[in-house]
Image (cartoon, rainbow, N blue to C red; front, top):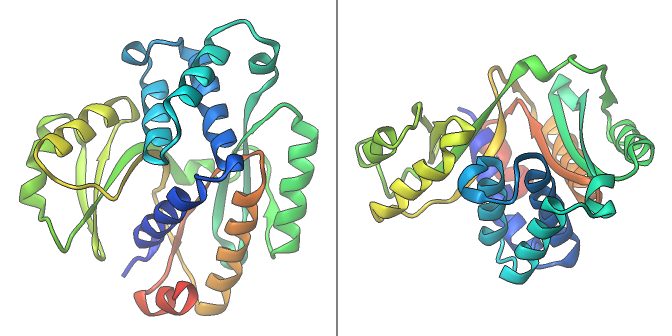
Length: 249
């Protein structure tokens, strides 16, 4: 059994709580500004911006903060121009592949921080391209499998979803990133409550972990996500329900 999706659900709920802190709002604002800078400030014409805004709304980010972030990104401000997206690739405990997305105005500082955290927690930084081939960028909507079945989610397929995957106690609705907003809207219009919806780097293969490696990996992921510049961490691990319950309680 795979614990990856369950862990994603747990991390999402934790992120909603953590997002009420200013530091997390800063990360969300950076993502919005970057999306607006790269694709324009109109959400209807910029799927990446739409997804970034929705993620901020899910985290209860105030409307004014969102609008300021869009304005900063779509304008000619020096602050927006200074920030860039950097993708770090590496390995964690147990040989798990890691993709670490960062939003930074100082690539050297962030790279040094990421390298230090990986080394401290039993991982190492890899070369560009070393693990990215093990992931595919997809929009993923998580649904509670105890409340809904795959038949309930046919509306998602009609709205453009590529697949529905049953994974432990969650259903993953998978779509192209550009279709995530439409798929989410169709699911919600059908009265189905979602656990999370975001664009992720979805693993194409997974590495099974024992309890010791899982504990080390989760500590590493937490440490990376606590870094001010790190926006998201993607990993291709698999753990049993038993181990996951021991590790996260």
